[in-house]
Length: 453
Image 1 (cartoon, one colour):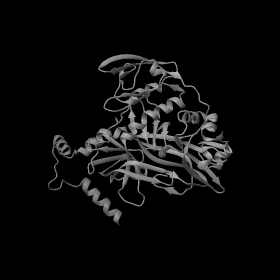
Image 2: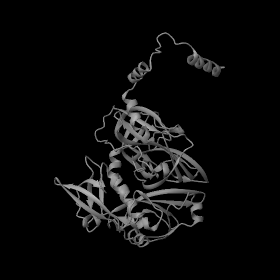
Image 3: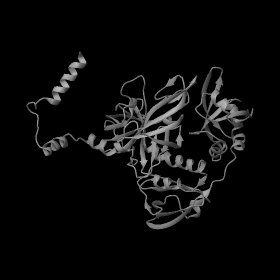
Image 4: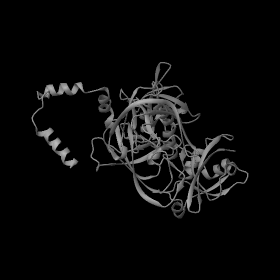
């Protein structure tokens, strides 16, 4: 009965004569009335929505006890099953690079992207380029034959408690939903389980729900200020976002890690965003050093094109191979100079040897049977075959038969990645190690900071 009443009312509203006070004037009059409704929120949405994407991630998951939001980190694994989860993301470069949360795609075997102007059935395959699990950030890439709309990185060092913010994302599968609110607090800390802690988060009451993970948090000017990441499951209207300044700081290392471990190349330099795009560091004796580049140089051009963000540099490098030359134009002390950066083949570190020397672990790649026993969607770690009784790993509680799944902020898949991570850690420094342990029916996750020798 109630449904029929609603339908009748809607039909009357559509087909009935104009009520007193309604305006049925010219199109110009209607446009003028619409323009009066065009608030700063509307302007911000129109400015940014085409750069926001929906992410559908398919993975082999398991029944588990859940902590926090979107199965962010889990302690107990049981029977595996295939499932699809929804998340959000946003483009940061016109060549198809997308930022999202690591937990949106960490266990995915297949990720697809849908844009705002596309129907739900159309999707584009995406691959994970690099991931930082410790800070819950990931970069994806889709292939494109045209420049795509993107969100330049904003800033989060001048945020004000009480200022209006917008979240755009894919909550509960409702594509490109917009919610608004204010910044409720800054510098918040969240803990998930016994070993995962996020610090310096933005707190907001803009509605964030499962599926919003990885989407942008924007200010009223449509500027990116954060990446939506979590909610308090026991509260209402309390959500959290990673400040965009964290992404600015972490992105150079994340992209360099991909270049060195997967592409086996080295440029010998880190490039980062700020008021200008600047060379952050140069490796002594590396390609950038040989090209005459110095830390502090302002990067003006890459391969003849103006540089507006650090990703302009990394996107070009990722399309090249060792031996290729990339022409650069930099500014130093007010003077403009050219440089020819010749990419070099990255020496392959011996991951197995370094694991024994630094951690006291002997490891092997997981067999298909072991992958199934641990309920993993694919090989996501290295099986531990021997533990030095006097080594750092043993003191941290790691045992033979455990799976070393994470080192620092990165997941482990092979010995090349392991070697690349260990080669830069100096004796006496600590590194976070995450491992899985089978205990009869259950699989448990552990993590400790290990002092390398």
